[in-house]
Length: 421
Image (cartoon, rainbow, N blue to C red):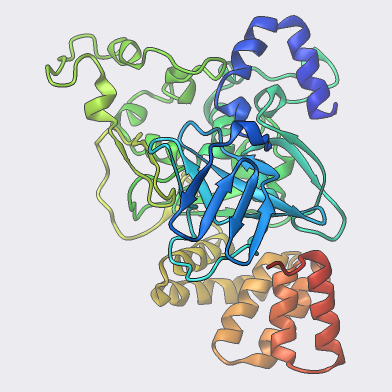
């Protein structure tokens, strides 16, 4: 495989017009180093002041090193501490033309600069990234922005490149789903790394994604929303993201695309010829702070049954379903989902597979139930399989309390993820 940036340069040699148009799209500008002149000054209440690439607050300041987000809707930022990337608690919201607290920071009473920018975060905002050894947020290499290779692959010759429009079914949809499929819960398959996914493969081999219990628009939930629409369901698989979106240009005539199937559809006088104005209205994203996104369900939603199902239409493995319930329980702070998760996870853990995430989750549930010895055993098993888990190291150290071994675990964790302000 060629390096991602080398692949992009090879594409541009022959496809100069496409490459130039794509370079102006939000996707191509989804992350990058911060340039002070490009950032608007501003304030967030009396706590934070933004001046170029400098963020100041009472008692401290950092330089903004990396932006994440195209600024079409908004943009988050990261600072670097000894090469480790951490998120800052403020972001810029383009729809308001103002700075405000970043998503997830709205309830914080004190400034929080400890949240790492992990590989999963950069996965959807950078073409590729490589972590330094024994770290979850220190990078040896990042190809910022989304480049050609992300959708077309990075083969050594032209025959290895993929044209998503020529793929069918799951393999075609997977190219977009890798970043635009959120679901109610998104669970990595045991023994698989999402970062290894390549265009032309089926994303279902890397993920289980659960849908159901819809709670409104999500920032990256476009694929699951579209799948719930009548248009998608009655198209026989023909309708996909590429039907309406040309990734090589910033915008197209969406109404014309709608009329290609709905030639006799009315034109609402109050909204003009814009079909999306009525059928795909913009709504506030429940996980996107002060942003609004298009609702791709086309206003025809299935009734909420209260259960979650596999987006891929298969019977989920008990392990994946248990981890899905566990994730929902954390997101919603609802212990009922822990009760659903526990028997599934307990059964899966009894099989003794190579699955550090499963064992860490079982350990967390046992610790919450006061079963400290059993929790300790599962945390150790998880760390034996994947030693680069600073959060698990801290949890195990907390169970052990004081002592030489607990101190060693804390020291290991701090090397992987140092404390910040």
